[in-house]
Amino acid sequence: MLFHVAMQVRLPPDMPADRADALKSREKAVAQEIQRQGKWPHLWRVAGRYANISIFDVADNDELHALLSSLPLFPYMDITVTPLAQHPSALPAEARA
Image (cartoon, rainbow, N blue to C red; front, side, top):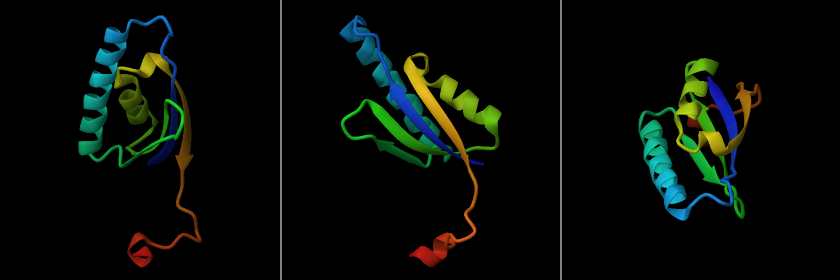
């Protein structure tokens, strides 16, 4: 199943810089591992914000929730999830090349 996931990170302004840096470093490692597994095929930064737009390709809602909640920054994120379905007018991937 494909999901469009919008994530906005909101670290507390009084969080010590060394703690924030450690969280961000762990976040990058976990996010890259999920990408290597093929479950997070698209990740884009939203320009001008500490936010991203992502596409996840997972088995179901429960797997998506498990992946998102495994992110070290999860407690500091506002997340919006939208399930995606194939559009009947969309060209197959091989026809778009």
